[in-house]
Length: 310
Image (cartoon, rainbow, N blue to C red; front, side, top):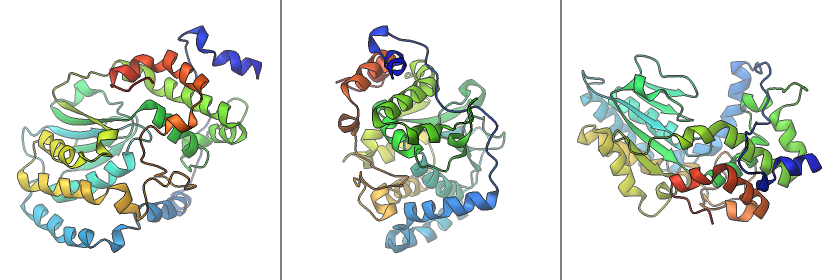
């Protein structure tokens, strides 16, 4: 414990940080086993759609837009949405897949790799693309308060079936095993370190002035004025009016409360991918020592993206 205290002592100032995640051999999971794990999660996340009349009314409109769509045309920029872990990746994956069907654009979801050469619309769940090689493009960057991403990730990583959390370290222990064994204080510090290791340098170097990227705060997409943002996103993409309209309707349709058929503020729901959509939930879960450590290690990132350190 004394060693851990020193490791997270904010008075030491900014330090190099390592993650507790294992980098051992990838966990081999058959497609059948993965589908069996993912299907119940998918059904929980989307059960509201089956009883939503707007979903069924939208389907023929999707087909009508598709009938008029030309797909990719010469000179059309590559379109993408870049998110981060626990920052609406599942939401945009659903929206963009339906949008790609309506517009006849080849869609791809990527993690740390580059999109395929023939991909014309993609979702990056970490926003770690080599952007110069993708030009011309029109992109959306979705950013969430890092403290809320840390809290959400802490709860999620203790139960998720994602294979990387099961990769062993040199001692044969996975990140999930360590998280489940840790007390809350230590587990949150581990999650803070994982976020720092994975995102700090990227976010510090992110170009906020790129005119081809629309910066969209997660908190605004969860707020009362989100409908205007829906319009802004597809206006930035520069797609035809009928496609922009269908895109906006998809954004409305896949909102968490509507899609799941439950209250998005059900913060105590256990083993839910969409645990809570509330902003500033970090205030209830991070202690002063967690926040002091975050300020030292991530303070410039918070201020860069206009998050109040207090």
